[in-house]
Amino acid sequence: MQISLIIPNYNGRELLSENLPLVIKEAKGAEIIVVDDGSTDGSGDFIRRNFPQVKLIAINKNAGFSRAVNLGVGQAKAEIVVLLNHDVRPKPDFLKPLLLHFQAEKVFAVGCLDESQEGKRLVERGRGIGWFERGFLIHRRGQTNRKDTLWVSGGSGAFRKSLWQKLGGLDELYSPFYWEDIDLSYRALKAGYQLVFEPASRVIHQHQQGAIRRQFEPEYVKSVAYRNQIIFFWKNITDKALWLNHLIWLPYHLTKALLKWDRAFIKGFLMAVLALPQVLLKRKKLKKLFIVSDQEIVKGYKNEA
Image 1 (cartoon, rainbow, N blue to C red):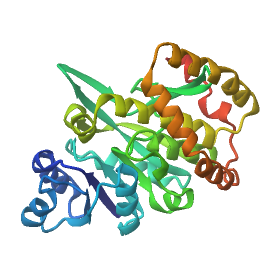
Image 2 (cartoon, rainbow, N blue to C red; image 1 turned 180 degrees about the vertical axis):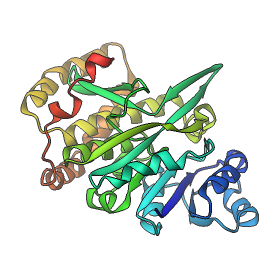
Image 3 (cartoon, one colour; image 1 turned 120 degrees about the vertical axis):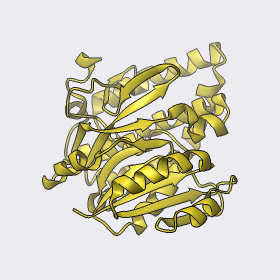
């Protein structure tokens, strides 16, 4: 099975120097694409000098995770694209168990098990669960002994390119980061496709050294996360009962944010409102693909939390 490995990068030269040789070793001659998203640390020149076998796509100005990944997938030659963040280090033979699942035509994406280095702890991540509560989708890390998952991470997962293109890829409304892979995975599930979590495919994810934590202020990161959580609901949810619940709880969340002067939530909500015209246009197009109900997608996950 032919694959293309895609690595989006923003100022990750140091981590690329550690992780890219391991990716090349595991790729065994497969196409590798690094999308350099406007780095200012010399990442592009470093790759050109040291890794001539890697295809480099250079973006002049930082465009955000979604745009970088979409460009990479668009130029990938293979039907199966494996996405790895620059702060992800693959473990030996991680590809084989990942790719076996694509023998089933309905499988859109398969996620790896992330051995996430968080302080002094090693946390196993990669499988996602979620449920609707107080007007929003709440998502959490799920147990790693099951194969079902609510989303496949855009930082360590494999995707079927033809379905990626049919679904429209990562939505750049979520730029610069967060919720874009949950959104794409959810759209795939609502369109009747399947997601799989594969615990035998292991990578090490150096979250605390990634670009988001190093490049952005915490309040801005939190505001973007709130904005994208709101946009996700407005764009994808079609269940009438869930919408009623959302409209009941939204004034509560806004009032609470004002009373506590939670600037991150207030800013996030205002940014979502500004994006509403685009959200509604996308929602109208997406509804034609949706065949599975929102309640069916999250059925059973809350019991696991």
